[in-house]
Length: 341
Length: 286
Image (cartoon, each protein chain N blue to C red):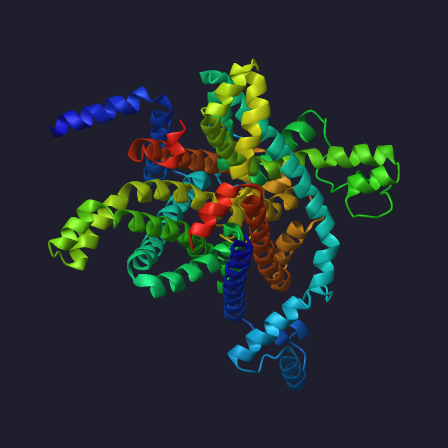
C-alpha cells in the first residue's frame, strides 16, 4: 500500500513538473515585455531594466524558470496590471464564492445523478430510462453559459420566481459577518434567516447551471456501474432473504456502484473548475472564474496565467487524493494500480 | 453483396430512431452551412441601421442584432466556422495524438515513458483551461483557439491509441505475421492501424463535439473569435447584454446551434461505440 501511494505521489509530481514547464513556456510565448507592461509606456528605460532585473527576466531560460517556480510556490503570483493589486490577494478574496458555488453545484449533480441512475436501472422502461438518458445527453451537450442565460430568461424574466444576475445576495439584504466566506454558512452562524434564504435563492440557478455537465457525466458512469452491480450474485442473495427489489438496489447495489465513480471525482473537479470560468460571468457571481473572464476582457493576463497554473495544481492534487482514497477503500483498485506502471 | 450490405445498414439505422435522428441533425448541420450562405441572400456582416434589434420575422427568421446584421445569416456562417474548427481539431488531434500513441506503444520503454510523461503534463490541466492558456499565449483569435483546443485533445487520442496498440500487438495474428518475417512498417500499416479504427472513429466523433463546445466557450469568454466574426460563442456573448431586456433571439439561436451539434456528435459516438466495439467495457453491462 505504501509503495502504491509513494508511486502515485511520484507520478503526480512528475506531471506537475511537466505542467509547470508548459505553463512557463506559454508564459514566455506571450507577446510583450512584462516589465514594460507593468510600468506603462511612459516609464524610463532604466526603470524597466531595473524591474526586469528584479523579476529575473534578464537571466537564462533555466534561471528564469527557477525564479518563476520559486515565486509561484511561495504564493507570489505577480501583480494585476489593471488594478496594481497582488494576484494572490485578488484570487484569495474571490475563492470562497467559487467554492460555495462549486459545492452547491456538486450537491445538485450528485443528488440528480443518483436519483436518475436509480430510476433508470430500477424501472428499465423506455420512458424513464430513455428520458434520463436524453437528459444526460442534453446536460453534456449544452453550453453551460447559454443554459444559465436561458434559465434566467425563464425563471427571472418570465416567472420572476428567482433573483436575477446580481451576485450572491439581493441589494437590500445585509450580508452576515464574514467567518468562513461561504454566504450560506455565515448566515446560519449569525442566525440570520432572511440572509440565508436569500443566499440559497441566489445559488439555485448558478449551481444548477454549473452542475449540469458533471450531472450528465456522473449519471452515465453511475448507470453503467449500477447495471453491472445489479447482476451480481449478492443482489440475488439479498432478494432471496426477502428484501424488495428497491431495498436491495438502494442498500446493496448503490454503495457498490459508488466506488468506481470515486476515481472519476478528479475529472469532475476539473469540470467544475473550468465551468466556473464560463458560468460565473453570466450570473455576475463574484468568484475566481469571473476574475479570470474580467482579466481577459481587460487584457490583464497576469490573473489568467496564475489561475491556469493554480488550476493544474489543484486538479492534479484532487486526482491524487481521490486515487489514494479509492485504493484505501477498495482492495481491487489497489491491486489493479499496483499491477500497472 | 455490396448492395445487400448497404440495405442492411440502412435498415438498421432506420430501426434505431435515435441514431437516425442524430444522423439527420448531422446531415442538416453539414449541408446547411455548406449550401446556406449561397442560398440565403443576406450577408452575415452587412449592417442595416434601419432595423437594429428587430424581432424574428419572415425577412429575418432569427431577427437582427444591435447593428442590424441578419442573425440567420450569421448563424449559418457560424455553423461553418464551428464545423471547420471541429474538423481541424479532430484531424490534428488524431494525427499528433495518434502518432504519439503508436510510437509510445511500439517504441520501447524509454520512448514510452518520455512520451507518456509529456501526455500526463498536458492532461494535468483541465482541457478547457489548457486551451485557454494556449490562446492567451499565442494571442486571442479563432486560429489560436483552434490550436489550443487541438492541443487539449491530444491526450485523449494518445492514451487511447497507445492502449489499443498495446492490446493488438499481442494478438496471435500479429505474432504470426512477425514470425513470417513481415516488415515493421507493414505490420503497423496493415495489421495494427486498421484495427484501431473502431476506437478512433468513436473518439473522433466525441472530440468533434468537445471541440465545438469548447470553441463556443472560448468565444464566450472573449478568447476565441472576436465580435463582428459570426462565431456561435461570441454571438452568445453579444446577446448576453440584450437577453434580459427583451431581445432574447440574439443569444437563443447560436446556443441552440451548439447544443444540436454537440448532442448529435455525442449520440453518434455513443451509437458507433455500441455497434463497432460490442465487447468494450461500456457495452458489457448493457
